[in-house]
Image 1 (cartoon, helix red, strand yellow):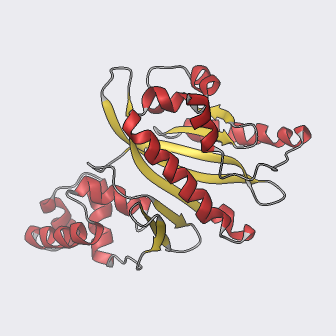
Image 2: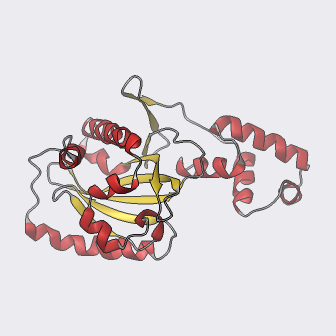
Length: 254
C-alpha cells in the first residue's frame, strides 16, 4: 500500500525520462556544492533524483532528519515522509506534488529552471513534537527533454503559525502563483509591492531592533514604526514581525 502511494509521487513525471549512467558523473559536483551550502546555513538540504526515484544527497543539518542519520534518510527515500509527516497531511503533499508538476509541464522548457515551489507541512521530530516546516523545491538539472532530473530541497522552520499557501515563484521576476485546493488550479497573484520605508523596517527588524531603535535609526517616531508595521502585516497577511519577515524573504521582497 505504502509503495503504491510512493509511486504516485512520481506519477506526474514523464516515465520515459532517460538519464545515461555516464551522466551521473556530473552529480558529484552537485553533491559537493550542496554540502558546502549546508555547512553555511542552519537549513536542512536534500537532493531528489527523479530518474532513480530516490534521494541523491541528504545534509547533516538536524531539522529534517528527525533523529535519523543522513544515511538512514537517504536509504529510506520517499518512505521517510510516511514516518515523519502526519498521515492526514500526506494526501495534501500528494496533491501539491501533482499540481506542481502540472504547472511545470505547462511552461516552456527554457523557463523550467527559473521556478521554485514552496509550502509548509508538519514533521515529527525525535521528541515526537510536530514542527511546522517550510519546504522549498527548486529544479537543479533537467533531462534533454526538459524533465526534472534533480531538484534541490531546503527545509527550515516556518515563521508562520498555520500551514498556509502553496506558492510557485519565478526567480527572474516577481511573479508568483498560489494554488487553490478548492478549484484545483493556480492563480497568478497581483504584484505585491512594499515601500522603501517598509523594506527598511523589515530589514532592521531582522537585526532584532525594537520599534524605538528602528525609529531612532530612521529618524521617525516609534508610533510611526508601529503604523508601518501594521501596514506590512496587512499586505503580507502576517500576524507578527517574525512571520512578516519570513514571508517577505520567501517572496524576495527584501
